[in-house]
Amino acid sequence: MQKIVGKMEYEDLEGGVWLIVTEAGQRLVVNNLPEEFQVAGLKVELTGEEEASFGIAMMGNTFYVQQARRL
Image (spheres, rainbow, N blue to C red):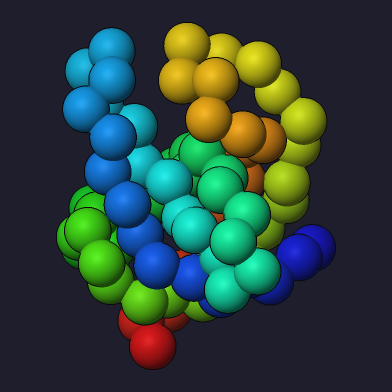
């Protein structure tokens, strides 16, 4: 299990994609993000698993959220 901290971003691509931009500048596509955390600019801590993937978004690896917390 991995913890990451960053800000949420929304890209209007193929129906919309939520990303987290980490404090180190890494961009990850977020999967399974609870609706209350789907706010652009919101600073969060996410716990889950990162997986290398290639999808429609092509924005970076996918982060599968198991827990989310507002900061």
